[in-house]
Image (cartoon, rainbow, N blue to C red; front, side):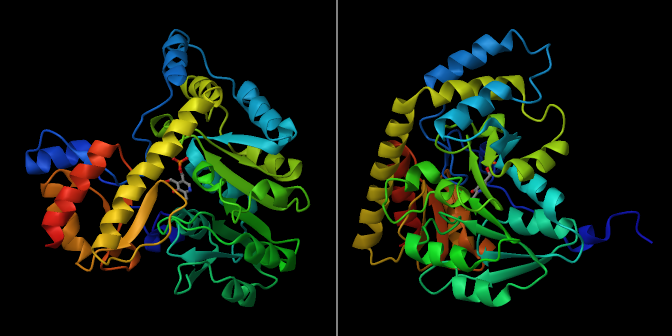
Length: 363
Ligand SMILES: Cc1ncc(COP(=O)(O)O)c(C=O)c1O
């Protein structure tokens, strides 16, 4: 008899982007361009850095467990009640809390494939039956198939919008039609980790529009992407007061640390940084798109800070060859797309290094 929870025996592990230090050591390199984890190449806002320095003086004190100031600011910015906002140690913890708050053994959850791996990991860990439905040929969530799989056991439907690793959004009318038919008792989880990169497109559905009329909805967002605070682990979600109340019971007393809360608050005051980040992202992705177009390579239209492209070469091999040249990307074989790679946007210099290395690898 194993001492471990039975689900652990078959649990898939999350494979994160390779750390810079590992690749440097492995190939004896002195500089690395990491375009593997969809981080912000501009780094954090200067305002966040100042707040971090100021807060360093106070780290002998526990943080505000309720993260009141940060939650209030997010609530005010989005016209919500304070009790509709929860802060997590990254969006990652929010996903864990969602699963642990809602799932009873035998409940079913539905998500797209490929999509963000943590829906599966967090849900199957506590005994959910995970139904993973392949994206359509044009990389959209197959909402018809979702509909067909919904039954009285369905607890959560996860929609990653924009989707990771493909980067595209679900068209608003299609998504709204699906949501309109979804039974009220099914919790709709809209993962909007890349919200700020997508919201300028009129085809994008802001989940807050849904939450207004559909309480069993959770919207996940994070400071890890556009705000450039991935290392501080601050994510958040918006939902009904009832759902947030239950999630809060198990969040951990001090789940969001002092420095993270201070930096997140400060970054909300720096709209310029967000604007610059989104603008640089477009320039970097435009360079990549120009390259792919010139080489007749297929890619998915991105609404994120990464792009999913078919390089017509084994991604397993390209991944290694690119690393030898100091570039880290995410190989598509991880998601069953042998010849595809996911590349995060970078500075212009980083993007040029990537494209030069890619050119060597595919030719
Ligand atoms: C779609 C999606 N959701 C959630 C997250 C979680 O981000 P974090 O835990 O850094 O907030 C990520 C991170 O890559 C993501 O891509």
